[in-house]
Structure formats: structure tokens, C-alpha cells
Image (tube, rainbow, N blue to C red; front, side, top):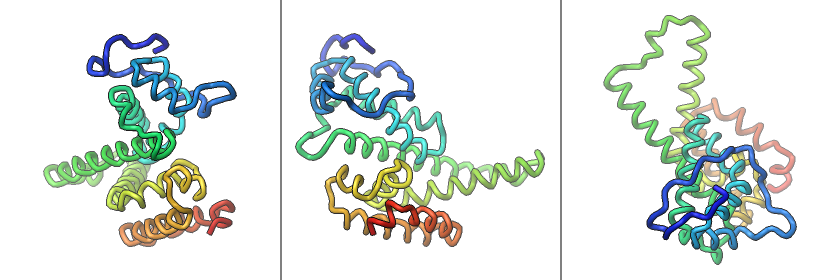
Length: 229
């Protein structure tokens, strides 16, 4: 991935895979993200590699938490960077920074994956029933099945939130950003982020019931979050 890609954008394929164990920020004297995107637009695979090295870990962390599956998260990140490679013009520096745009793209793709999986799971349940009910592998398998069902319910509920609610919750609780950071990344006021998080959590409570309350209360008690409310 260190060599420039030949040909125009219409001839591009998927960039070679890269490890997610990469650094997450640029350093002194290194080109800004927007400059690297311009390089990608000019066909530079090395510019794309630099963006991946800079943002790959954060993108994977977000995708992993939304998808709750390492393989799916890797696919989501790969798809996101393929999008950057094939159509870098989708990023508009005048509307915000590259990191916020990329993480939003990753989040959207991850939610799409969750929705497709949820739909496939519902089709399976209609045609074949719940395979966990017939399991004879013992209590450990039963607990694992219950955990998988619970994780699937959370993903389904997240997919039913509005886009802004999902984005705010994903960046804060999955991406590890503070409300002020999310506000800066998404170009909205801190109060707007607070409102989206608050309404999103209440919507999740409605969808999931009391099982969410303890987790949400623990998350909202974080010093940084509590101090910004």
C-alpha cells in the first residue's frame, strides 16, 4: 500500500488490508487529513495508507462496539476506507474535519450491517425457530445463547433510533468521546449532543425495558459526562 495506485479513480479496486494496530493521530510536520484526502483524490495509495494509520484504530473500535463482532467490524472498516479510496470527493473539508466524517461513515455502515443481520435472524426464526431452544450442550451453552440474544436485542434497538441519536451514543459510549468532543466532531452545540444522548437513552429504555437502566446509569455517572451536564 506504500506505492501510488496507477490509473484514475474509476480503475481503483479495494486497497490491500492493513493491521488495525495503528497509531491514531498525526504528529508535528505531518500532512493534515485534508491534504491526505487530496492525495487520495490524485490516486495516491500512500496517502490512503497514512489516513488508515491515523484513523484505523478509532474506526475499528467504533465498528466493533456497534457490530459486537470482530470480523464484521473489520469488514465495515475495510468498506469505509474503500469508499474513501473510490470516492474521496464525498468528504467536504468545509463541512467539518475528516475524522468526524469518517467515523460517521463507519457508524452508518456498521448500523447497516446490524440491520441486515437482524433481518436475516428474524427470517431464520420464522422458518426454523430458535435453535437455542433445542440446544443440549449444557448450561454454559444456554448462558452463551442468552448473552447472544441480549446483544442482538441491543443492536436491534440501536438500529431503531434516529440517526443523530445513534451517532451521539455511538461516539460517546462506543467511541469513548466526551460530549464536548462529539459536539466538535459533528458540528453541533453541546446542548444538542446532550439532548440527543438523553432522548436516545430514554428511547432505548422504552425498547429494552429495565435491563438497560443500570448500564445507562453507570455510563452517565462518568466524571467527564456528569461534569458537562
